[in-house]
Image (cartoon, rainbow, N blue to C red; front, side):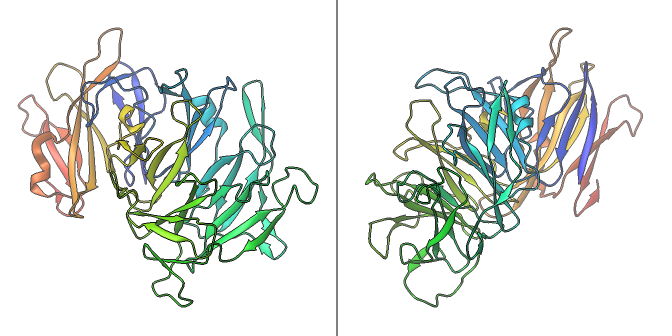
Length: 440
């Protein structure tokens, strides 16, 4: 269910707030300034109204073809696309949100999206998951506009390439022959390598001449964060994410596997022989271990130095964790847990929007009800308060506090707020709607 509310301040804003997933988005006015969020209360936010990011997936792309890597983000929560333009030169990082390029990459109804150049023309194409299928769309760029071919379902002579709807494949040139291959972890926990034969067949980079090269690549079975060679392991299920990264820098691709039922990532070393070797079931155990529901890692050049950093996110469609975009440097040393989120309003699950003049200064302030799951796996509900500090010339909000009225302590679930002068004393009284306890 989605709710749309008009906020009566100096300008009328249309705020989108998803009650389930906790995202807030200004649709009609991008000029409203916001100072601060719960992590950075004094900073001016660069893109406060994009709507938060719950289950984002990252790819590099040069949106405006200026020679500098930008960021494409696809959030499987809502199938939303976001374009972030890199503003800084070499070895620096600062992004701005671009609504125009975001709208050009409209990819509704997909489960996941990876941008990879499959036809060797220098432009990243779109690999995307719909239901259990993998689709490919070839890109074109002209006059600052991106366009894409009709989707084609990828297949082999034996049939379509299938992947669990929750899962994410690894897409890299596994055999270093010049074209992109696909590896998935199938429901039995085995890595299946789909080799791209386009160049071998003399067809150039066409992107859809796949064969099953190895139905148990690496000779292992992945089960509950552990690998083994048992032909009949227990506790098998679908829902794996796979990142192919040369962790040990030996010129081949190692595997970093996330599990839909776990919060950690397993590093499996490609040692060139079968079976591959499990190195770390709590990756990276020598630094800040990734602890995110259905974690997934993306190698991304953040600062335009041609060296990949690594972004870890949750692939859980119903992720409720705040601060769930973790950035690591090129050596997997932890940097921060709110990459991009530091510049937006993201209040977690169960968001509801209300306005009232809390400081009696004659304008409407912004109250955001939200909830999240804490470390004890308990749902906690609370209000974020943003004070309206607009002037005649500037529309502006300022973060005030994360736990307005200290409601976390009374254990209410599914908070919503409404204001009315019930006792006719000239001020607004607060009515709380809750999921379990009704109106209070």
